[in-house]
Length: 322
Ligand SMILES: C[S@@+](CC[C@H](N)C(=O)[O-])C[C@H]1O[C@@H](n2cnc3c(N)ncnc32)[C@H](O)[C@@H]1O
Image 1 (tube, rainbow, N blue to C red):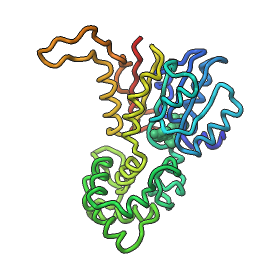
Image 2 (cartoon, protein in one colour):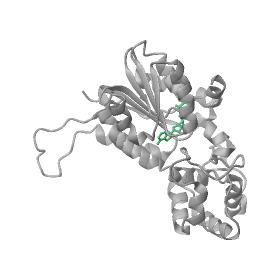
Image 3 (cartoon, helix red, strand yellow):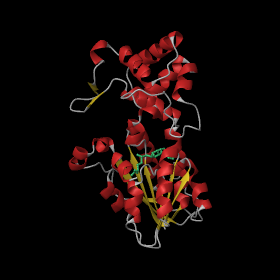
Image 4 (cartoon, protein in one colour):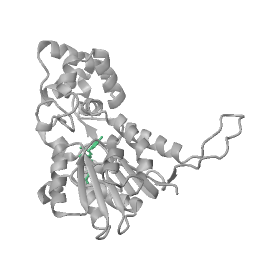
């Protein structure tokens, strides 16, 4: 377990712990266990009576969590999408009593690094990309059947890829010749579809790190296949009722599409309700559900230098109003 834990370095640990402010005896929900770096840090701070309840939809992550649960009575893990966190909290008898909830969104480096999970263009593996390989449709199945305009829309909307149309056209042409079964096949189709000068690793903006031409397409398909944005949207709407009054929420996102959802949600929930223009507010006025805990935080240069995955992390926090 120690070896696996080294594979994924938890992001923005110090900042997350400061936001969650764990206290002895507190109940904490780690909605994205992964390799459990944040869960383990919480366990160190909550004393003998505290609890960490984790969830993950990836069976490999859950197996790692179960190994921890076997030796740590204050910890439990459920295999679940976090959009079902209300059901997990109810089943655990902690609905409305949670002192802190953490979402560390996206994928673990191990999911990306293990070629057989089919997430990455770096190695060659079956084109799957599902975090839970028993639920939903694999990338291979979807790409085999989806209309060109749907593929193009997904790549554009979720990858913000300027060559989305060319790439979608190339995918549809390629699949007419031969089934697209592997990540390496897809990466090569995308590489050839972008204009020749852009085929080697490219910068999205001056000064930014270079990225492989298939990075955005792979990200887009992964987000679509795993319904990542819907998951965040649903989970955030549920988490407020799962928290105890005064409970804290911390969310780490890794791209602007996720962060936009988090930012809007926290902003809307932390504002007093507004009456339609010209109309008085009906009495009594409900107070805001959340109070923002500081502003958007990014990792420091020191963290990014030792953990490049942290580079795009964006952390936001809020407290449930009493
Ligand atoms: C970035 S990793 C979390 C890393 C973790 N904080 C650590 O310290 O090891 C994200 C994890 O969230 C899981 N995940 C992503 N979306 C999910 C969802 N909608 N429901 C449940 N788990 C999800 C992934 O399977 C992955 O294991």
